[in-house]
Length: 323
Image: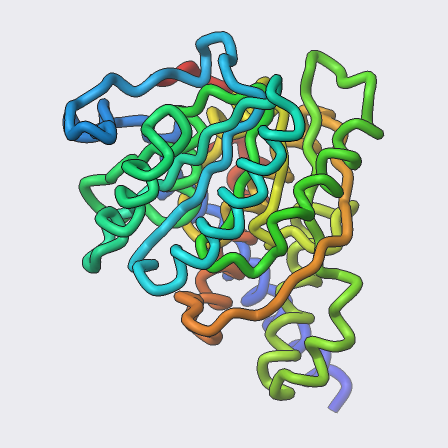
């Protein structure tokens, strides 16, 4: 029996090694060497409150606003108004208290099939296109792709990513701003503060099914094991970056869908950009586009490919400028 058992173990080990080799080859061969920065002609401008076309600025221009808020939106006609009302109410009150404070909100319509762009344009007309801009993408790129297009089109010295569902209380921007300040001095003017829901994990487990809880723990383990070890919650959509940190990380980003946050933070760690994790208020909002099983499966694949592609040199940290 012992020789048979040894042969079986050896065969399984050989099979596992062959499978891993195949995965590495597939990850390497299917990798695009540099991110796709292509803009369609229609994406090179935005429509202002008067209905006229204006050219999109560039992340490589000097900042002219203190803060840019980038809101990726895909079929968000129902959830977007609550988030925009809360955000703009906060931003307007802050500007009245401090007239030197300047801001812009960029809603990136990620190829929506509903009236997301029309809903966002109502805010542009109400507050003016210097404060609210709508960038409409020709086709759906995914959340990461939408955020990147917004980042590359912004004017702020600091850039906040904020989800369209308004799950994070917008006033918590003050918490991530404090987290960013506490990282000073910023090396090469680069720093990132991540909103975090890690402190709410036990409450969320009580409300989830065992299957979803298992998926969550599996995903967190893969993130920790393969990519990012220092941040407990990589997926919270409330992140504040300095302009230089946003330029460097998003210029190197390849993943454009749900796992983009993980690659973004992986790149930041590789570039030795300091990162703070800050607890924020968060409420689950109905209407999520995340399909539990298939989305987690896709994200798990992306995590593995992130690690393997950087490990094998298929992806390199070569940032490139893009308008």
